[in-house]
Image 1 (cartoon, helix red, strand yellow):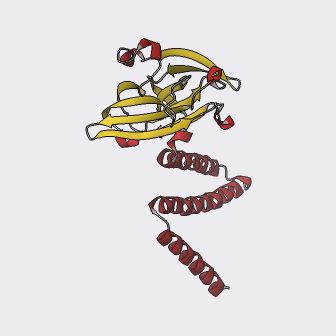
Image 2 (spheres, helix red, strand yellow; image 1 turned 180 degrees about the horizontal axis):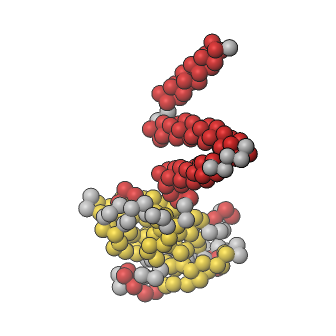
Image 3 (cartoon, one colour; image 1 turned 135 degrees about the vertical axis):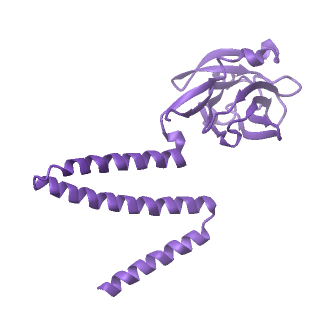
Length: 248
């Protein structure tokens, strides 16, 4: 029996080692997290069972142990999310691009930019309506300081009134400019005039952690489609904002 257990442990360790060797850096992080979490859950479960048995034997001092185990597991899960998927934690908006549109309005033709409310598939959102110029794209420029663990969120769309009009769709792009230059952090071509799947709100999320602590320029650019046809390119940035976890 002991030999069998040792063989099982050896086989598992060998398999894990092989997986770690073959995995890339991100895969190794996930693998390590899986192993640590498995060990944590095993130890937590054993401790919980022993503490519960002690409480059932009327050793009520172990109620403190039970409470401590619950708090410890909750804390571990919270820190795991904080380290690996902070976007799953409750978020707070730290910058609203629509509310601060006066920062960029002076740089854009007033006929090409306005704040509106659109309803698409039953969901109503406030949008920055932007139309590309006939000779190229229209860019909205915002100087902002990026706080730690910040992400850019928005919902993209083309106005429903334009879905049956002429044109070849819209190209949405997001750039971040810092002291090192201009960085394209997001790009998407949206054409609801010819693609049914684009007739909805399209979620956008960009992790801005590489620019944490920096004063940068966030640039929203809207251009025509691949044919250069800017007719009815009624593009909308739905509720664009910067968000970061609420705690701490």
